[in-house]
Amino acid sequence: MRATDHRYTGEISKFNLAIRMIGHEARTGTIRNCTGFSEDRIRKIWTTYFKNTDATPVRRRRGKSPRQITPFVNSSMRQTEATVLACLFVNCGLLRVSEPKLEVTPSRLDPLTLGEQMCNAYETYCSVHPRPQLCFERAWSLYYALTREQELILARCDDCSGPYIQDRYALDYAWCPFCDIKHTQHAS
Image (cartoon, rainbow, N blue to C red; front, top):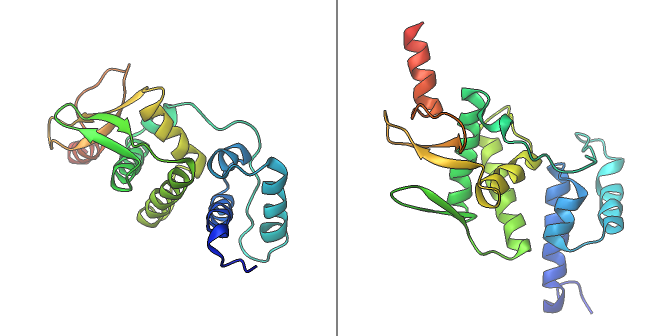
């Protein structure tokens, strides 16, 4: 038997996803939900491939994943980054947006594909933002806030007609963070 046999393809895909997610400092529970691996196996993968390396250290985050929505809307810069990340979710097939009200629905993906596409979206986000404000776990939190809890919504800017992340229950001035930054700079 060789590791290249067809019957090991699923296992190799799960292993590669676990490596990617550990590299993004995902929590054990998040990795377990996508790969189906046990906590012990995830710890062993981290120990084998990340613990004693000379490269940039990968921390093991502990505890529950963050669930607060405040970091996505508490400043124009963070709201901008959350909006970019949400648009990348759509581009990677994680979310579907229906016009004209910008209603967000999750795509029906198996856990492995969901994890792979989330990694793709997050890696693209990191390449666009040299110093990203949102960690990988915050990206998961944003995804769930848009799909499960629906505390965050996509709204449309009155100025530029572009989409932006908005707290469903907060006062909305109907300006996206991009236009807000632009108007703030012109007022100065």
